[in-house]
Image 1 (tube, rainbow, N blue to C red):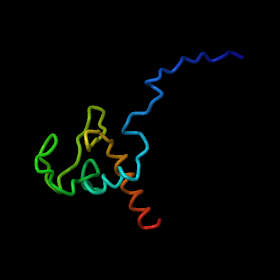
Image 2 (cartoon, rainbow, N blue to C red):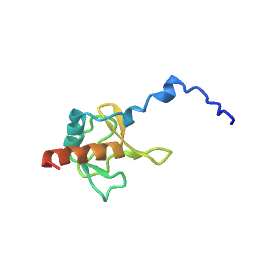
Image 3 (tube, one colour):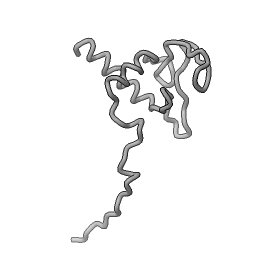
Image 4 (cartoon, helix red, strand yellow):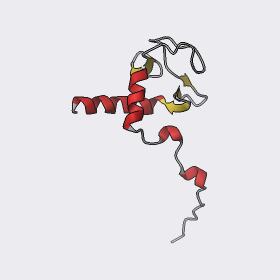
Length: 102
């Protein structure tokens, strides 16, 4: 029986991207304060409030949250960190399920 030769994995490849890291309850609360899940949005998220020109661009309440990268992944920047929209949606849904006792 032949042995499969395995290549060592670099330390950088072992660490997950920050947007894939587990979301804390506090982060989920911040997401829920600023964003709402909306199926009509291409990213799945809409802004709840205007940001009054703070951060990279002026955002109106009810506008689509996030932008699509060159691989087609939707991401939203919050507090200087980029998060995958799918991670934010899961965190908001889990937070709301927890509040409802599901």
